[in-house]
Length: 119
Image 1 (cartoon, helix red, strand yellow):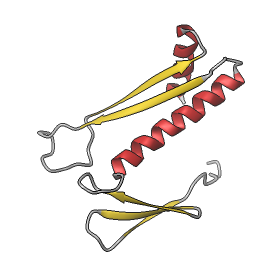
Image 2 (cartoon, helix red, strand yellow):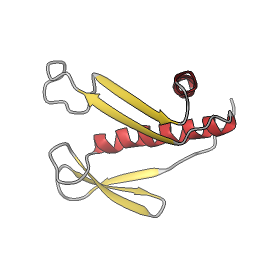
Image 3 (cartoon, rainbow, N blue to C red):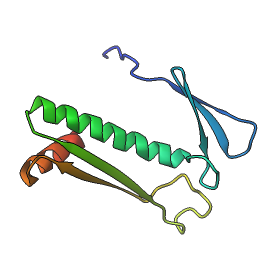
Image 4 (tube, rainbow, N blue to C red):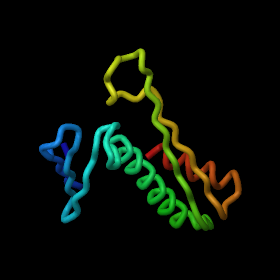
């Protein structure tokens, strides 16, 4: 088996306030609330990680393939089925990711998104 190299380390701890966590990555700290809190929720951070990764990865693919991406927006929506597990806010029934890419035609855009999906 290959030796794995750690890419990231993120730590999160309780804050002393129910439904609020303190997150740390390197020297950066932020608050993540549950879905009823005042701060950005953990699920929103989860989705922002996916969309940030998508933007960065698609831009890298486009640069490698000489695709003329001018600008990109990626959004993500998460949906729950309240009947599946009543009261459990941690399970998503569906996550939808939407790409808007300027500077490429439809075929190039589809290629970039399909390549991202395969990785």
